[in-house]
Image (tube, rainbow, N blue to C red; front, side, top):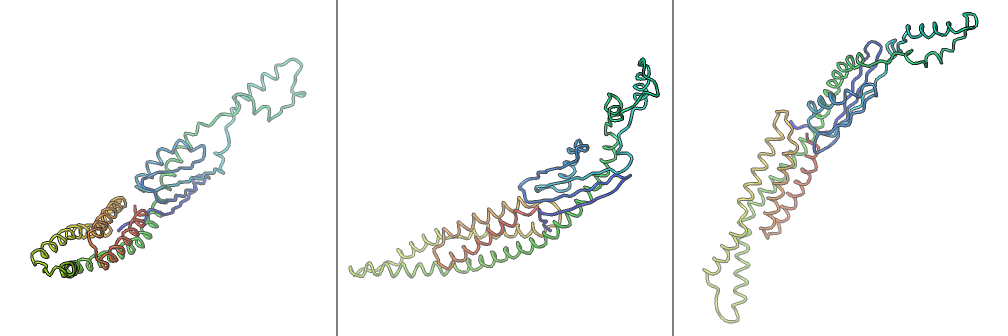
Length: 295
């Protein structure tokens, strides 16, 4: 069954006081492209996340947003106690500065080089990598479920358009013999009117030759056969349940169907056939619009 390209999925989890939340949105796109929004401390995970998204979602314009907050003690910066003690010892060695006279400005003390130990973030990344990978899988599962639901609606619409085209095509094929016969009658009347003044009569062989030329020029059997083949392949693809992307192939098939319909319309000079071809081309255009949203 075909799947839509639009969808939404989210997931969240709290681990050791840290809260992770992920949202994934998918919109139409000819190719796969991603926009990944990460907190500054998790920026180095962008490449891994993009690979995971491409593997799960195949096609579409994907926007992924990661939100992270840590309310645990792990969020606090680490103090270098040895550096602080060293600064205090040096201050007390200054002549005239004793314990009783010393006053410590904590803000100034914390601003001294080496007092606050910078966090390399490696522990955070190791934990976040596993958590975010799990949340992405959960959110992708929800998004794919939504894609499948919307794909069912697309399937019904595409199947209806396919039946519409097939119905009009049957009428076109039935109409072709009548079109040739009508041309023969009009041609005979025209030739008799032109030759009436001279008293001559149209020869049967001349009439048959012109009718044969017209029938050859307006023969649409080959185009109809190809269009019917395209419709059969179209049905097979929208009915298939292999899970592979089919959107671009369906778009190509729609272009080929439109090409055959245009050729049929240019060959036939019957009003009813022309009307049917207009209906066929309208249905194909609607198919082209809908398959733009098929994965």
